[in-house]
Image 1 (spheres, helix red, strand yellow):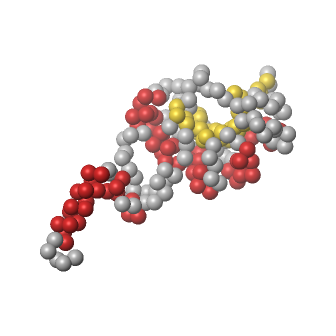
Image 2: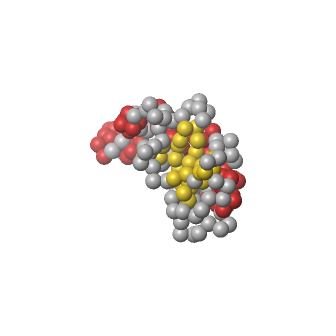
Image 3: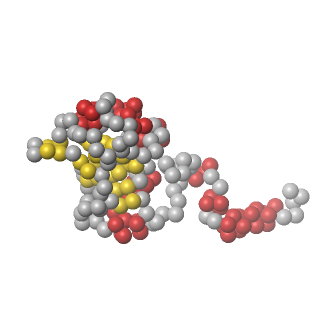
Length: 186
């Protein structure tokens, strides 16, 4: 997962004195609100990368037809206890096969990073008091999960977990199986 710094973000919002411009100019790496995107999508040049910011109350289906044209979808967590953006990310990846970047913004805490990764997020802008190095460590807390997710769609009972654990575990598993059936003519 990529952790985006507020100061080093290469994507830029298009705003004016009174908030977002209703009809923003076509510029590469523009990050638009959903309203801005709807205003310019018919005239947006094909070669320019564009991203859209979505509130967590938006139905992803409303953006489905535009997904092939988008490079980035930013999903917002207004509060860390509001998990609707997790569902939005999973839908983008699993149902709509979105291959662009999905970024979490807002009240994003270190503790959320494992679930962000499991539901399809590539990047996160952590809350300002959170540290990226701690978030990186949090991503390694769990070696695997029982349930399927975006990274591993099959649940644990449908996978060969000895292969996931590495070659040494696979060898031990094969040896235990051989010992179990030794002398039984199997």
